[in-house]
Length: 457
Image (cartoon, rainbow, N blue to C red; front, side, top):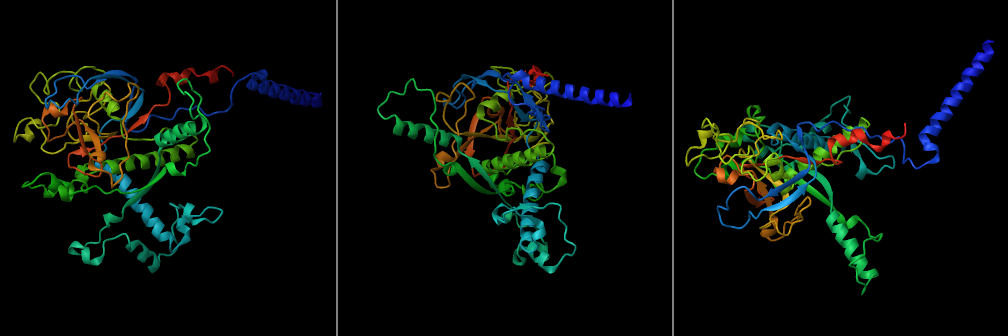
């Protein structure tokens, strides 16, 4: 009797297993690739979800300079995440410290291979860093390797041994999708369909062209330019800011400044790499990369869903009903402190807009990914952007990048959501910072609860 029960249990298990296989296979129907991890990763830390929609950018007021750069244009923007505040000194310091530590480990790897994880094929150019390795015995060779990161003895101020910030270089790569599309699409069609009217041609031909020409390597020094406080304000005593604004913990939660557009882009790339590596380790699918916002995304987010208004809170004035200024800008000549702050103030000090985003007016201006152009007419009305990765030898006009939001040194007129300005991509200013965005994968956050994967259970 006991033997029969055991046989019955085995048969039942086999039947259940076969039924499960049939159910998962959809009885031979088209069910798609199964066991795809559709788990949605948590909202990126410190970010706010901005729902997709449309708005009229460039609208909300007059053109005070009569420069014709505020021509209104209605555009549609896909959903994205945006940093709740500007990137702070302490957040950017995490990047600087990571670069410093990676260079230190690489130098140590030259004298102690335990600091490197070498590819199984033994190729040193693909060696990774072993962040957990600790040598049993610290030798003079280790010490000499680490000393390369410090300033030489003749440059030491009061004999202080300090990190040589000129050596804090971050290496990353970018892929030129637009260039690849133009090259493969344009040249392939010219060669294969010469003399043919391509007006109705919609299928893209496969290209055997190498991708190598579209991959660019960048090496960027990541340390902020602390001397910008002196350069930006002549005959002004800002030496304490030079010495302390980035280094002192008292300024940890203030917006980082003195960062070029190139450095801001490098920060976003580093943030993407470290975050997606951790998600992969935990079994989550990769997210889109962090990046600088497009000019249209920035203005769309700054409006907080209130279209055709000049300020993030919707009204036409930079003060509330009690006469209190509600942003960090220059209220009157010589009266920087009238709004409560002479320099940049701690992030999130003033009330957020309706999306929950802080400091979208004043405090520090913010880099956008766009190259500067005089008007919106040439841009598409669907996720518009105008990018150009300027080379060092390009004319200066091609090295201009958009900045938005105005700063503590600007009048209210220059801090309105539609106000447009530019700065050169390799220039660091004491009044320009940045925040990151990440494109949302999907139409809306609620859609993932209603996916087709629920059909076959």
